[in-house]
Length: 132
Image (cartoon, rainbow, N blue to C red):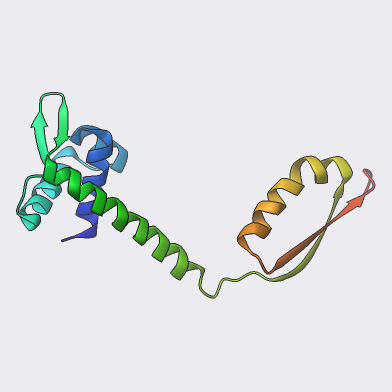
């Protein structure tokens, strides 16, 4: 089973039609159809009923959708875990900004940054409006 085929399956299941999934994935609709057929062959079951209005999941397709969504979550978690290794940001950063800008704009964004990088400390220092 090919992960790209599973991604395409998820796109078709979510779009409800091959053409919509093809547009979202920026692929030719024939390629999407071929990849779905390859996945169905690998699993030895039909995942979709082709209708004039789109594609509908079969009972096997419904079961596989649950599995595929778990696989997708695991892939996303693995990618973010592995990609984040060695990229830890830590230390103290002091940022000078005019009072209004610091409170209204920076504070929220810096809070989001420190939530992601727990070892990072940011000190927001107010400075006079006119500085060079």
